[in-house]
Image (cartoon, rainbow, N blue to C red):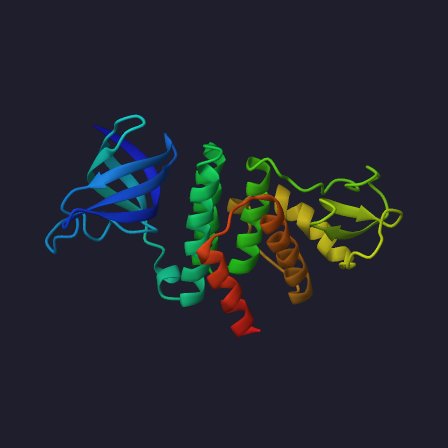
Length: 244
């Protein structure tokens, strides 16, 4: 038996009474775990065999195979997320996104950044900004990081006027053609998003204009380069249209 720290990112039924849980863990990355009998009303595993369960999992671990769940000690219930449909929607997307990323790159930072992002959303920080920060960090792990230190076309680090998904990142004044120009603040913020330690965020002061420009860039960039087409992202995009 082994104790691992992890979060349930997905689940599926397994027989009439059980589930298979897909968990991103600190120790082993992405694993699948059988939660026997968890659908039974009296099962102690019932309430913890669901998405967004973050805790210490006692399991019979089998490397590369289906492990078995013994018990769970919950670390954070994310109670504020669960009370807000907007926060639930963003969190569901982050779970699905993290699951897609970890299957391509089983990097320990995925677990750390996902947990820190969910904690910040639970604490009341803007879920759109937190989502964009995590999306940007994941692009490097997917091997398609945009160029945000210099012009993606000529390599100069001065005179940057915009961000372009088509051009692959920053575009300077000399290379700019017909790309939409974004604000100077957006150009600076996207670098801050990449370098910031999510766990240390204590204040987020981002204008609606910057939020929209960064989110649009990342939406376009993900659809153009990552091959990740997630249902939960479509739901968020529809939610944003309603809220706007």
